[in-house]
Amino acid sequence: MLLYSNIFGKGKPFLILHGFLGMSDNWKTLGNKFAENNYQVHLIDQRNHGRSFHDDKFNYEVLVEDLKHYCDRHQLNNVILLGHSMGGKTAMLFATLYPEMVSKLIVADISPRFYPIHHDKILEGLSSLDFDNLESRTEADKVLSHYVSDFGTRQFLLKNLYWVEKGKLGLRMNLEVLKNNVEEVGEALPISNTFSGDTLFLRGDKSEYIALNDTALIKMQFPNSTIETIANAGHWLHAENPNDFYDSVMCFLKE
Figure (cartoon, rainbow, N blue to C red):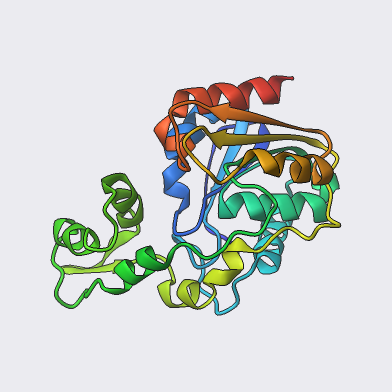
């Protein structure tokens, strides 16, 4: 039950957690750039995502324990921890529960607050994919386009496609469990949980995930934090403006 990961580079451990319906492959380009700066980068698939194990349990408590088990098995401590969206919620909870294990925390476009369910059309679209009849990624994209109009979002989602066997596509994610537990993704960080270590929150200037009125909550739970805005970027800020995202992270790590 150990999480799947792609590990490269040598140096201080730098763990990266993807968002809901994503996978570690989303971070390969930036991960390679971070590894060039004397970091051992761990691109991790969270449970029910990517190549990691499938399980009926899915909430932030078990995602955190998965990560703790991963760190113990790899003998990792004093790590840099970066999480995007759902991965950011996992990273925040982990840092508040195991502060001695985290040297620096980076949270990409998510705040500690509660978020209402807003993935309905995406999950409906993914559920509509009939893998007994789909023969190509192009066909899958055409079906998904009836539910998700944005091309970039569809390409992000369709990275989950893989050839189960010759001529038969499938999804790497555990779609049924994620659908049944989607309300868990928006859960708030418990208000009493705090982390006093160095923390950087990055928000996309076109995203509404971190709003101005989130600042007080962020500062209360992460008193040694700064909030920076990445220009020309929405929720997938690391993909939409990777250069500025990289520069902000590296500046923070070198402080």
